[in-house]
View 1 (cartoon, rainbow, N blue to C red):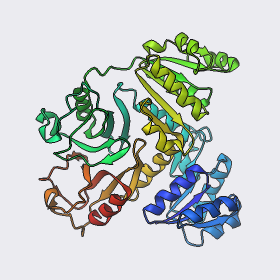
View 2: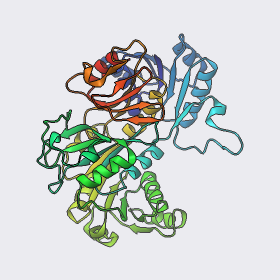
View 3: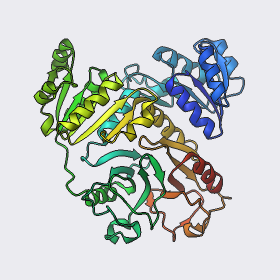
Length: 450
């Protein structure tokens, strides 16, 4: 596919790299020639220096129509304007990054579709959703959803008391549980491992379980004895993201408390967000403030301020003072690899990676041989592949197929069905196969399945 990207910031660079890895033709437009030069040094992309909001600039970039056009610049107004022009110039699917949906009004019929926009990515809202996804219990570290509403991959950590600790997967003691789910991946010390029958599960390992929501949740409850339902959630950070998370947490029925450093903001939040939510004025890196917030009884502590280092330090202190699970939200690219390796942090999410995954997930519904998400907990991705009519695996049992040794299929979607990819399942043309893989294996699977 031919893909055009407006904006070479963190999100734009991430998307460009992902699409290049998927062997698409990528053009990036930005006003900074230095930024584009650095991008060309790293990736096989076309670039155009200029203001994409200018018609001539965009027309020059679109000498050939883009199958997908993505505006992820820092200005909402420029993104909206360029998307409108791209539609007029013949772009296919159009994606726009915005700070909020306040630009539209559904009741009046003024929707993204009316402006020619197929998908709107709102990083802050996506990040709030991502954080709320791990509030089902204290064991969950990440949840990956699919276009099929009942399909799920959930990541959880093996604790010392887990019945999985110290056993090989072939010796799994509960056949009824394992029949309807799949261990899609194992992460050990940040490294991805394809779980096999002779894989020995250890304390500290992270397991990704794939299947229908009810069966996945049942597996995690069984494998994580002592797991508690979450009641009290404390959110820290003087940012609109932190306030948004705290408000949504309260709306979901959790007991919600927000630590806000700015007194004026704290008072305003008491009036604007939720009268039932406690707002504590103070710095979350101070013990007295965490004590006042009730950290010893906290089920989940979420640090979502604008300063990454403060978020991480706040989580470390909260964990030491008794918080059962801590979640750090970060902004810098460097922390994507670092946070999963910080044992004191239970889990963490990158704002730009969450936003990028929301765009990849939308594109995966257009092109079924494509990365649909990058994992937060390991250097790996979730991919979906459509079995083609002439595929080497069509009309074959999975056990007969020559899949890479380092690959475990996670799920097979057949119409409305979610199938467990066992060896005796025959793959049919039109099936959608989902897998957690490394980049190298993803490319091999794409060639084999499509």
